[in-house]
Structures are given as C-alpha cells and as structure tokens.
Image 1 (cartoon, one colour):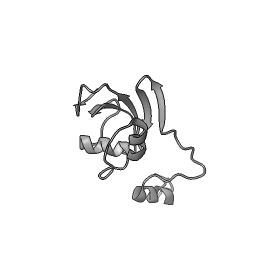
Image 2 (tube, rainbow, N blue to C red):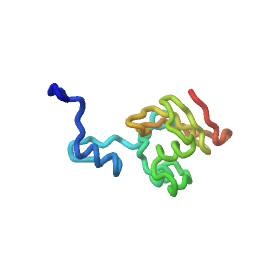
Image 3 (cartoon, rainbow, N blue to C red):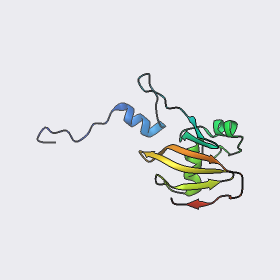
Image 4 (cartoon, rainbow, N blue to C red):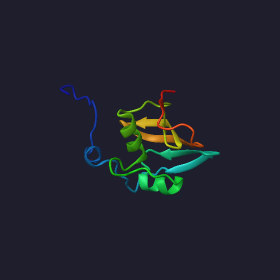
Length: 123
C-alpha cells in the first residue's frame, strides 16, 4: 500500500496451482493417501484418485466426471461440504474431516454392510 505495508503475497506457484491444481515439489512432504483407523474405517486423502480408490476398496466409481474421491463427493452433493458432514454412496459412508482452500483434503471412509444407499445427512 501507500504506507509500505504488505497485505499479502502471491507466488508463481500459487498462481499455477489455481490454474492446474496442487503442485508437489521436493520440499513438500506428500500425505499418506490411505490409513486404516479401525475395522472398516479409513482416513483417506480427498485427492486420492478414483481409480486407486476403486482398486483398494473393490468399488466401481466412474472417473469420467471426477478423478478424485473429493471430486466424487462434490459431484454427489452439488456443493462444498462442511467438516463433519456425512454422505453415503453405495456401500461407503464418507465423513468430511478437513477442508482447505475450497478442497476436500481428508475424508473418513466407513465401509458399510450395504443397507443404506445414496443417503445425505449433515452431522
């Protein structure tokens, strides 16, 4: 500003990430994409590829519209969910754990026995 103060800083990486998505570099530690936290319960990254999720959880989500699990959740809800919000899709219950920069960062997944399908609910 006119007084020499700094309001914010935007780097080239910030601009590129807005255009092409998250960029990993040699200084960033990659988060684990899946961690078992209990029987039939897992913490997964919202950036986990649909293809990898399908392979790991024996699922059959299409990756035509969304390529990540976070994208699948956004597609089904039609909006950005809040932390703690739940959505059931097929045999999975997804509970939103972390949101950052309008992206789903971490999700708790519970593999259900199959009685409820496509149910949405706020927690």
